[in-house]
Image 1 (cartoon, helix red, strand yellow):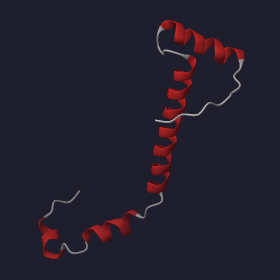
Image 2 (cartoon, rainbow, N blue to C red):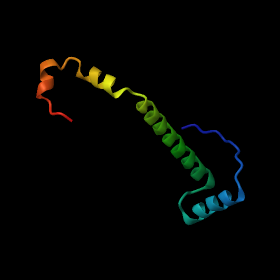
Image 3 (cartoon, rainbow, N blue to C red):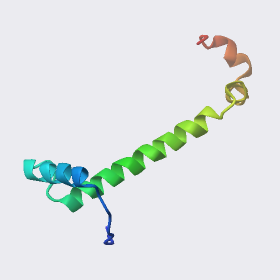
Length: 80
């Protein structure tokens, strides 16, 4: 994977905590730790976006679409 260098500013406390994590072996370097944190945050934001979009669905309309074509078979299905 190709990567690019960027510059970021961190507060003294955040930098101290980063260094502690690197020193404890939780990450091999500051760079790696920041990279993993950003990737994790982006993943969470993506899942949050999916949940927001799913919340917009009209459940009755979706159920009606799912039931199309079931006809007589629908009576044989258990109710949920």
